[in-house]
Image (cartoon, rainbow, N blue to C red; front, side):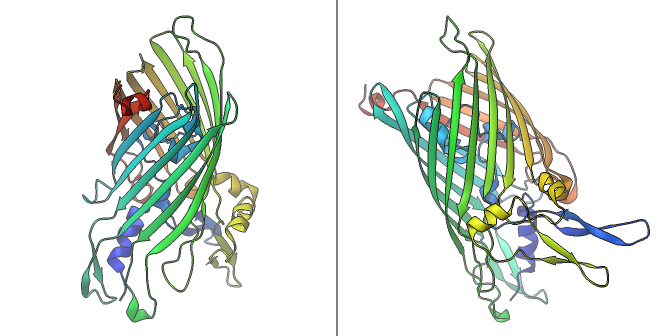
Length: 406
């Protein structure tokens, strides 16, 4: 049986990372090339921003000050976290304007360890669960063929270590499970099954204080980070093909300006690029353009070829770069206001949105909210438009003392 209803739902749910391949047309009607060449991958839920703080700042997180959600952005930051331990829980509705039961749930945490005077290492974990709701299957002639409950999830373990006062590195191992079309399509001779992948993240983080406030000891600082995420085996849902997972290269910069003992301001920039093969197209003898699936190649080969395989040349390669810029104002490190903007080329997905958010922190407890301002329409409308997502944060300054009841 086929899964027309499922395919429609997945196209909507995965509009974050999916797109189409169309042809440009001149005024004379002659086709001249593809207009949209969005890079598509399996398990695009692995690139959904999972925390409300970064979500409110235009999806920047590679170089901003670390919290428990650094496990997703750049695990190396956790070795430089100010607190001994932390936990974050985030709930993100998905396609809220269309369906009520699609959501992403995320939990992450870390614990630092080492010498009593210098806890320069951290272990971390995270789990994400993407629920695609209930799907009605149909055959090719629209006959009902039961229901399904597509689910995707990932489990991650990380380790980070400070190499010097200013530099840290980190590594994460992860298991990804994607069960979206299990058992469908048997009558066509294609045996669909859940997809599985093992992957790693690795990153580095540098932070340097520029000055020191005489009253608080805290001063302005600059930080930079680099992270390669989701570097792992392709996923297969059938016996006919394999799909790359969304391997990504991210580079981030941040500047923290301490105005006085009560006020602090942060600005940050993230630059991202998917490290997977670009869509390919060829022009046949009739002048029509035909899409060619990327050739089967190893993961490492796909990473290196991704820097120069776009059929539009260097100009198209530059369009594959995504930008996020964000700002955060903090008052007494207890009240926060955030804003950001995310940009992606029209030819590569056309995600462009403004995000806003607030946060409050009291003692060990914190609560962050993010709101994505509605923009665009149709396939260009972000799945999080008009959605409020939130994160619960717990930070422990001295975890060992708390564990011993002191």
